[in-house]
Length: 288
Image (cartoon, rainbow, N blue to C red; front, side, top):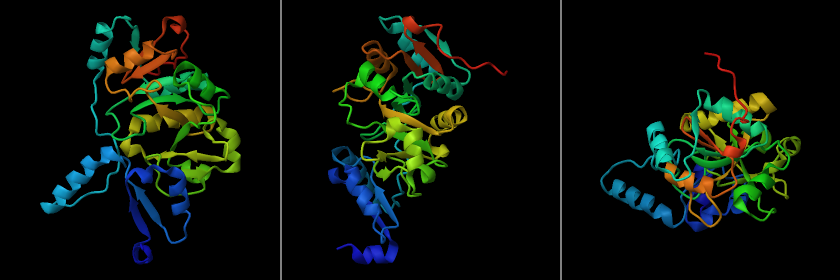
């Protein structure tokens, strides 16, 4: 049915609930006649808002541009975070980080999961570096630790990697764009041993390959991880408790944090740490 289009362009766009089937998408991009498959990152019911806006734009003669990122939700300042901490009944203690990517990378490499709250919230079903729980995928057992602290998922359900765009072709054997975790890829053998915590039992990963322009701080975090471990990859799962929606606001994040066993929460430039580990967080020397 789409043969003529494929022969002419080699490019397809795919949306709707079925487009979130990452294994199907892997098979589609493996076809020799498919040069690029664009999967709408908010496929499903939430994406009808995008479809409605696109239809109105076309009716008014306004060109519809390709959706390059999903950071369309609310953002909060350091002052918003401080105010939320002041209001919260747990009376969280916080400190301001001067080098967020470096200091959080050190905490991750020490084997600690970190709740990561930065910039605008993601639109759609995937956590892509705005509202995420992160782990260092080269640290054995970090996925189990995240499950024990907050997720309580079946162990056979894989956690996913975000990675630098310089890493994607090496680890995934493909340069196909993958900014939204809408594809799985077969992981190269050497990388299965380097980042085992984000490789599924069948040797695949549902990956996000990030370009710096769309989330500079998240990208820089992975650059710091690459300096420390040799791998510009981070385990990334959504910032929420089981059965609850993804976190939006600082108050949401604090409620989730103190209702779980997570020990580290970074919101913008501010690090909140549970009392039991306060004073023990790895720190980066101030070069200023």
